[in-house]
Length: 263
Image 1 (cartoon, rainbow, N blue to C red):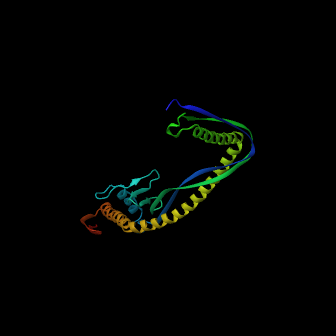
Image 2: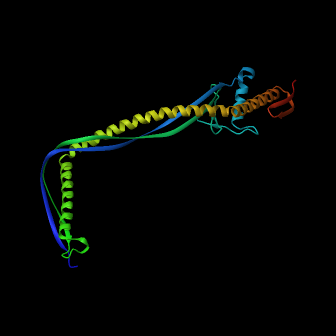
């Protein structure tokens, strides 16, 4: 084995040919889907005991009495009680109790689209490639092998140079095709997003029905206790205000026993 020798291949090519390239783009569309379920009911305490009972209910919800957790109150004066999956909202102004449940999910859709750019490429490109061999052919590296290797490398480089010339001469067409592909991919992604959102809305509505049904018993329990306490406190307050006395005040579960003395 001796020092390697080199062979050089030079290739050049005049180009005048139709040029065409396909450009592919991907797009993503993301949106939020929110569905709410609401059930409302009046709390007609004033029909039997007047406004005093409604005012007393506010005190109960504010947590003024032992055994009753305070509800949160917002800037509008409404009371809120979070029960986990549902929220109870009482509006003293309208005497309306609403039960609300909301589900929110993000959904994503992806799409790909392609567009073609074309034109005429005109110009000249030149490349060169080198191969190595040994006089004694060591390792199979003969002069013929080196020539073939250099020829293949030069042809590959020539093809790449021609493609590069095409891209350089048609950069505007490539940009326009890329924009068209991107717009089409975005359109498809948004269409798919709309389909997925609609399907998700239907699924969320079904979930909300289950949630509202599951919470019904607990909602009734919480509100009935509050209303019962409002009745109890109002009766005792009316008796005291009119000079009477509360002789007995007992509660067993949801049953309230009051013994009052009126004068």
